[in-house]
Image (cartoon, rainbow, N blue to C red; front, side, top):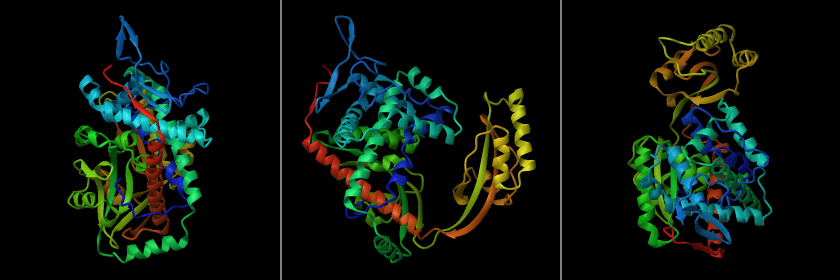
Length: 466
């Protein structure tokens, strides 16, 4: 993985961190479509897709009849061509790849490896008597829908119209949730991070004042067998090509990275060069923010890295704005020359919000009274806001004053700054240090446990062309 293996810590913040990015894949897909998923029906049990259960596509025929082929057996649990086809189509759909035979074939080896790892993780969860209920999966999906003001049902239809069974997405989510609980249990066994550990890390960071620090996200592509190095490299190059064409890094990481940072869209936070694999550190140091790296060979596989930001430790002045946001969606795309009655009505409601609200609480209460969905105020860093016109508008908008309606093709947004403060972010807070230490321990525990599971497993790979 990307983090240097010498950093071994754990902590009680694991639940919050693991939960922070669990649904990145679902969220990314829904954002691209502008719609959302319907929570699974309580009677569905897709924890391990079985032959015929998700047969959106079959890829073989015998005597003119479509058949489902077994591609791998993991401790007596089968993985079929249907499972692989659904998952690779899900990946292609979420990243914008064309769903062509050539693209799907290039995805197959890594998809199969990912499904093998998922089966091992689910089996370990079952051994530990950990079960993720349908209600928990439904609650997780519903929470994302609510937080992002997404209407119900469109994601299911979009997946199925592209030959992807909804159970494929549910199964991936169930595996992530189960594995997170396994890791939480393992970390509890190892003890917690103490305040002394946090203070020691804080002192070590302060000693590096004036040195560079990088905010990095990763996609880790494992190589379990040295005979498959080139196969993994080709897959990494396919992923890099799509990332450089604009595929969302967080969505791709959530779908295919085999690091625990996948639960955060690949984000590993702020790190110093000595916390990275040496080759990764060398590449990252030469990258401009926003760049996508080449496939970097590291122990156990390949890393694809992106640099989000860079700063000097101890010197990163920032303007932090706490603000409330209300969205008023359109039921159809806006034609500026011919707005619909619903769009005109939303504009009037947005103007009223701006007129009556003089605080974040007032804005949100007024929006609730209009039947609009609301979220608690969020803190943003002004310097990171794009496009520049929006950044300038927020910089000049007084606290307690709502913006003019911000009109987009899909709806209208009203923002209101609650308060702002100037902070030097060059030195992380104790909570941020704790979170980083927890993530490092999670990564190590996950790596170690996966190695043990592979050593103990009986895995049979069948002839994929049979």
